[in-house]
Amino acid sequence: GVPPKMATTPPNLIVLMSFNPPSVVLIGDIKERTVMHLNEVLPAACTTSKDGRRPPPAFQKKTHKTNGCEYWHVELTGQYCDQVGVSYLFCVLFDALEQEGHWVLKDTNALTADRETYKFFFVKRL
Image (cartoon, rainbow, N blue to C red):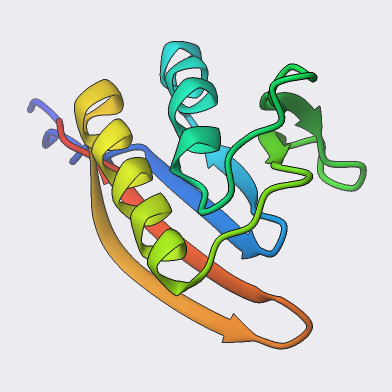
């Protein structure tokens, strides 16, 4: 007989955001055009305005030293987000992921220690 169809698992994306200064890590199968779009919108979403003398920070693709996993990282050095700015940065991120990458938020958690850190777990609509 014919083997049963295997259910396909949607791709996952984990977003880590820490404050202040704002820092974003993207782990998962995200399109480069989505990352480039985030480069444009994230710096403008901070509470403080960006320094016009220097180019804004941009995501860099990195490789984890231990497991070889690739990820994207940006630290918005010189920027600050108050509580309203943190919320606005979340909205800008969610909107970009929904529009550009068709990602859907599935879960989240937060930790406050030295810095506020938020983890967002997304799946891609198939």
